[in-house]
Length: 477
Image (cartoon, rainbow, N blue to C red; front, side, top):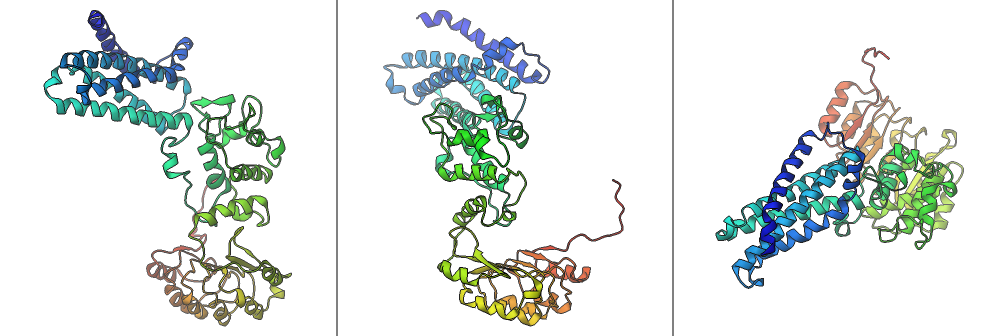
């Protein structure tokens, strides 16, 4: 047959390819690649389809031998497909190396793609080399063919992640991933904006694929912009390229993401434009924004939707409005949330009796900010009536400690801040019973190191913050 005439030449080419790949692999850090070879590297996405098809067809001749009329045909076609598939995988691997060396940056996914691609090349060559010898050992032959198939799938998965974004293939099964953080700890860029960019934008704008010379995978590249100028103008969404492109109609040529790619939802577009309009901060916490600001209203909904929610019903907005005055602010914890946050202002205007006015919405209040008021231990009995209270800030009041025992009935209380109160031994005893606390702030409370240590033993699952302690060490600037 005609293929047999060229078989020896192709086998020698395959052997040479193995030597060439090993040289590149060993010396990749010192190789100087001429620019014309980078053209071959950029053909990598085109070349990779040939070995995939050929190798999969070759594998089929192993797992489904009855498709062919006799063992001779199975050997002939299987051997030819595996030899050609291995040879094309060598060309693809070499092109991939040149593309990798041109990129200048590495990542974990890129490394996985490189090594799984090499695994395809090596295992397919091994399968071809022993194809005839393994003819009598069906199980061994199928095992080796399975390794080739698994390597192809793994290489395709990591390649798709590089081209289209992280976990592109499996994303529909799990949805976009977002780091689980509380509303209190959430950074607007890290936990809200960056996940959107990674899922919808970074696939085309990263080190290995800089469409328009724009990268969105790192802060410094976002600020630098692309070939048409800055990607964003802090405080001005209308003149920010990112906002302009995502808001274009999908049929427009310059709309981003391009047609065929996963599109941003209306909520994601609103979040990005609101973030840019608010100043495009890369390190600001969500809770530092005005609760009435569009960015806070939009972003806080993410944490509300991602939580287990609350079993109680929302309070009538008119009722909430009636509870607000010059010294007290009552507002929903987040847009659409039935939970309420209460903050007091002005020490001179504070009256403990005003807390009783909130008892009619006690079920809904989950946060209290009573910093710098005149609370005493006896007043904590009123606060103990807010059964769903999760966060209580009573810094710089007149709390000594005995009244803290009344808070033991608040099973949902997870954050308690007592900075600036002169606490005594009774406070240590009372706080030791609050085993549900996750965060406890005790700055400038007068508690000794021994008392703090005993608290840490009693509350092993609580993060206790005591602030900076001057131990006399002098640090050189």
